[in-house]
Length: 309
Image (cartoon, rainbow, N blue to C red; front, side, top):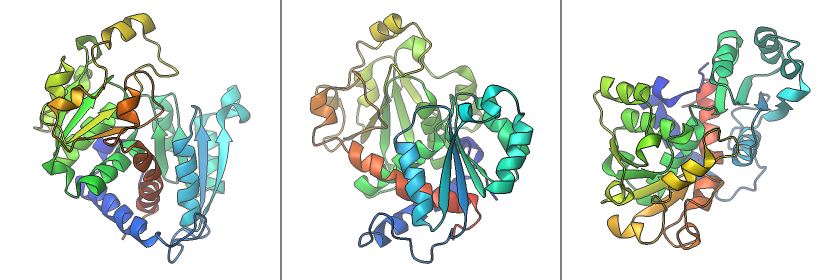
């Protein structure tokens, strides 16, 4: 049994194995319908319990299809429908019930401590579907997409992030350390990654490059990543944040600083951080990026259940 909570806690060889398995599974599904099982239905009889404390579209759909295609089933819970959500039952007691009824637990939460507490008390694998500090399933799928399009390991590419220092970037930084790729970050000075993350990078004898200039960050980039700058639950001063990111817009002009074949990826939903001509243009692969999550979620599930070969 393996948990999948934060990329920095997972060995690089296991991350690479998940990506390789996902590549094979995608190829084998070309002639299959959406709800047809993968060969051998490796998770037949398994139940994945999902709980969402935050809104979800891609994570919800991709995990639903992932467990179904592997031969298993899923049930989705909302915390406000449980005793847990009303403060009437402890995480420890809830975890015991979840472990009794299900084989795995995927949690999308607004509380990092909560997911760690669930890991402490669950006797089944827990998967982080998103937390305030991390979005590991998203980023591992993004790496899969990058390598699929570029047809080379991400370690041989220059990756650029333009945007806020959020949970997605935290996981991208962790991935850059684990999988040894160059990562350049473009963001306002007040919105740089926090010191704990930067110290962890240094401790692992790796480097990331932070620029308070979008053009410098995008220089010679193979891939430009972004995310919505103003998120639904953003607690910062919105007016100040909009003002700070005014000069970090992702537009066609920015791509003149990157390589000619540079691609654009965005984990969605989008906001005003990117222009339509980029988001809907030829360099954008956001729909391929979103659909690939199913394939990677399947390999993550197999990893968690100890069935990754």
